[in-house]
Length: 94
Image (cartoon, rainbow, N blue to C red; front, side, top):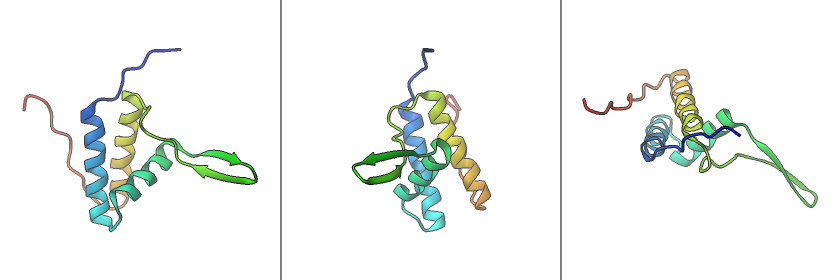
């Protein structure tokens, strides 16, 4: 197994800010936007309990740095496709 660096607190916080901004622009909650982006970027998994089968969206908590970057990239792509311009991340030292 290849070692991957953990996501940063900055990545997590920035993803949530982007979801809030996009949700505000489109009339959805931050939670709704986050779930939609995770479904788009991560897909869904089938869970069967007894006779019930449901598609669920995986948690983003265990994602590593490169996978979290993928979520942020998906947020920008979906935002652009929706006609919403989101702010770029601030560079350190600027």
